[in-house]
Length: 125
Length: 125
DNA sequence: CTCGTAGTACGAGGGTTATCGTACGAGTCG
DNA sequence: CGACTCGTACGATAACCCTCGTACTACGAG
Image (tube, rainbow over all chains, first blue to last red; front, top):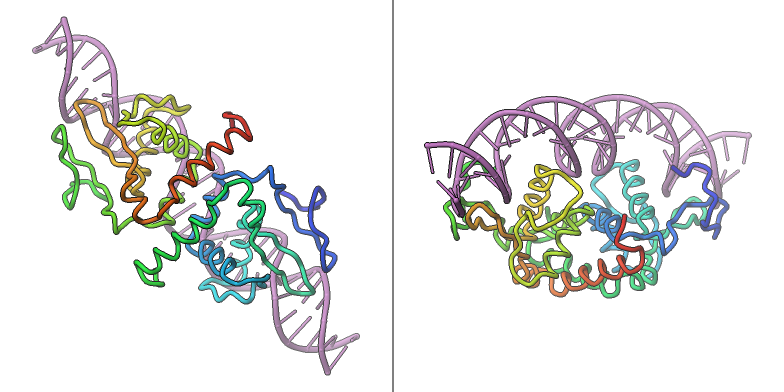
């Protein structure tokens, strides 16, 4: 789904374009599904902790490169993050504005919940 | 998993017992996964709208009885709802207290988000 | 141009999930 | 007891998802 990639995408830094859902296309179930995975939840958390954009390679995840690609794509296609190519790197940012508009306060509560849970269970599994 | 059902369960009205996770066993990823399904999200919403307990059969879901059983079990095992047998019926309630304690404010934001989304996309798919 | 780095595409394996149908168990009411 | 209702258990199917490895493309640096 989405090989050619036209529609409404980004063409920021370098040429390549990436398909993102429009704000109105974002669905709660899809967002919840995206965040229901430990690795993606971790990406979500680290992404919101760091101020600016983070490249995929800056995350130290316990999976291979291809799996990493997969998870970032799920997050992008669900509307949780926005991805832009910058040279050979791919930068990631949370779509805070869109998500806060669609689901007011949800992101903050979700973030707080992850923090509390880590404090509760430790950073491990 | 959990055929005999001992551990810490309920034995409220009628004899049969149902396995529930302890409060400290509830994990955010699991809760998110449970709510990432349209049918379960709908159950979640209707359950929080109605004040008291609701039996499984009071929900008008577009799936068969066995599938309904499946979804309620996922919700129960993730810690989102509490189920108790009352005669031949099985009553369901949200575990508001536990969830609010573990993930403060999350439920309310989630509920609000579902309402907003319905207003945005209509009650349909 | 050549090499190295960042990330993708594709395909496959293994596990989980959603759905159903049918057969069954537990209570309630007559 | 017998019939009815509510819900379960079991088995089957098809779809999906996470994971990986390998081969590949896109840029940037020397």
